[in-house]
Amino acid sequence: MTSNVGPLRSSPSGTAAIHPRRLSTAGRHDAAAGPRLRKQLSIVIPALNERVNMPRVLATIPHAGLASIGYESEVIVVDNASTDGTGEVAAALGARVILQAVRGYGHAYHAGFAAATGDVIATGDADCTYPFDDLPVLLDTLSEKQLDFLSTNRLGAENREAMKPTHRVGNQVLTAVSRVFFRSPFKDSQSGMWVFRRHVWNHLDIRSGGMPFSQEIKNDAYVRGFRCGEVPIRYRVRGGEVKLKALRDGLGNLSQLAGHRVRTMRGPATERCVGDTGCALVSHTGTAPAVPTLAD
Image (tube, rainbow, N blue to C red; front, side, top):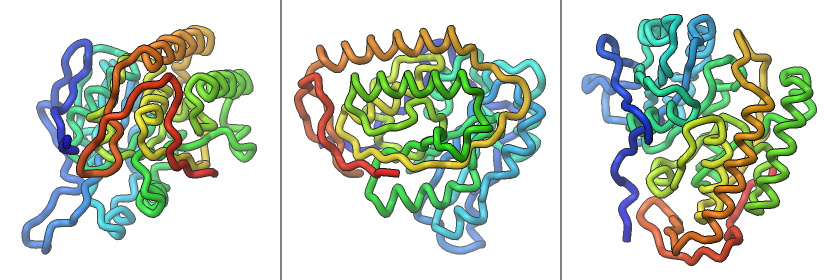
C-alpha cells in the first residue's frame, strides 16, 4: 500500500526558489476565524514575461467562490526567468512566487508542483485565455464524478475566434495522434487547464521540460489507470505576445508522443491508483486500461 503523500518533485533541470520578498496571504487560515477548512487547493500558473497580463489573470481567481465550496486556496505563480518584472507584479498582487531559472513550460510546472501544498492542484496559463473563474464548477465536477484528473477542451466551435486557424489544426492533429497512441479520451490534448488530485502527480513519470508537458501529463495519467475526464470551457483571446512557435513546438510534441508511446509499451508493471489511500500494481500491456471517463 502506497501513501498518497509522497516526496515532492523538483524541476529535472536547474533549481527553483521561493521569491525572497513576498509570499501570498491568499487562503491562509486565521485561527480567530474559526475551524480550518477541510480542503486545500493550489492554483499553479507558469509565467514568462506576462507582467501586463498578471493583474487581469489574478483578478479572475474566485477565492470567495472556492471558499464557499470548502476550499482554502493558494496561488503560485512560477516566474520562468522573466525579464519584465512579472514576478514582482505577481507578488505585489498577493501570489506566492516561485523562481524557475531554467526556461520551459514543463520546467515551470515541475517547480510549481513541487512547491504546491494543496490536496488538489489546478493549472492555467498567465495569458488571460483560461477561465479561472470556472474553478468552482470544475472542482464540483471532479468530486461528483469521482475523478482523479480532469482536463478541459478549448476546441469547441464557440471558441473558434480565440485561436488561430493554424493552431487549431495543429491541436487537432496532435490530439488525434494522442488518441491513437494511447486510446485516451481527451479531445484536446494540448489544453493547459487541468484540475487533479495531488496524489496523481506523485505517481507519474513526466520527463518533458517544454511544451509537450501538457500532453504528457494527460496521457501518463490515463495509461496509469487514473480516472480521467474532460469538460468544455470558454477559451479567450490571448493577451500580450504569442510565444508559441507552431512548427517547432508541433514537431517537438510529435517526437515526445512517439517516445512516450515506446515507454508505455516497454515499461515494467506500474502503479494504478484507485483512490486517495493507496495503489495497486498492474501490468503494462501497451494498451491503456479501461477507466471511467467524463464525456463532454
